[in-house]
Length: 400
Ligand SMILES: Nc1ncnc2c1ncn2[C@@H]1O[C@H](COP(=O)(O)OP(=O)(O)OP(=O)(O)O)[C@@H](O)[C@H]1O
Image (spheres, rainbow, N blue to C red):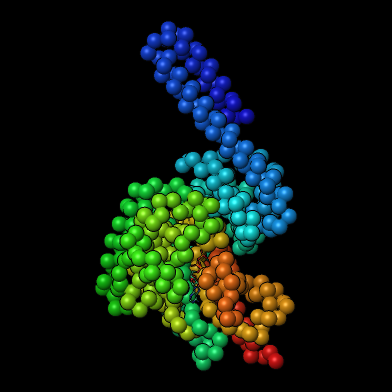
């Protein structure tokens, strides 16, 4: 409707000026305006059709249980199908991945930070259900847990259950949109900025390392890094359908220290993922290293943070603290209980496979992490995993 009105107004204006201008210099200019506007209108109409079809496809798919399907109601479609962010992202850009991947548990991504506001009628209920965080709630102030990491004693000092521990957080360079709206040049400029920030690590003992761009990395090295759980996978279909892999591998890469205990992913799902990991269960030590890494980078680069949603990320599941603290763990007794998933849900824990999200468990090893990231501080997110896993280990010890 809005698009048709716009076309009529511009068309009418063209007629008026065309007559007034005597079909001279003004007319061709106005005709171009009309032409351009009609193109936009047609694109709009095509885009709106895609949104309407997507809604139907999702509703008709009986196997799809995503939060997108649940919260993309006819009402929400009608409210949002004409909207665009300042950078031009539409509702279709938000839902595209979840439409192509009906097995997704969430199914939406934000093409730019403005999307969280423009498409709030869809994002808000999804965020509410995933994080238990309402539209009037506020992300607490940053609290990484500085000075309190000693409280987190090793969870499994005898090494019976936990193989390794990892904590990661995400960051977005202020002033840049997320993947779908970045240009090839943006990727290169951002990579250069980040590489400069890595120079700060030279003055540290254990964080200093090297940046390895993905362009030029051999497939063998890449596969080894992925297999050893250090590097992001390539070709994730959820990200591909979210239009997050354009210009790949341009501007993508990994920084790591010599021990591979501090790593930074550049321009994968988020602009930055900062990761601290090591063998064993010393959560305090892993967090301490992450805090030093984050603070060092933050002294050089400024990141996008919203008073309501905290640190902004491409996927709404990562908003707020952006922290996912995980252990690779074997719990042969507890994990085979019928109510294991229910137990984890109650403890606010998420279970993934050994190769991360959308992978299966191997040899009984699971990835268990905090589920919630928004509405709690960074330290509380780590504690959610810590307290939950502690409880699971107690249950394992007490099981026959
Ligand atoms: N505790 C852990 N120990 C060793 N490796 C881990 C641990 N937790 C996760 N990983 C590895 O990190 C890699 C990335 O995992 P995954 O993609 O699931 O999570 P992520 O980095 O938190 O990002 P996202 O949640 O966006 O997918 C995988 O190889 C995974 O096996």
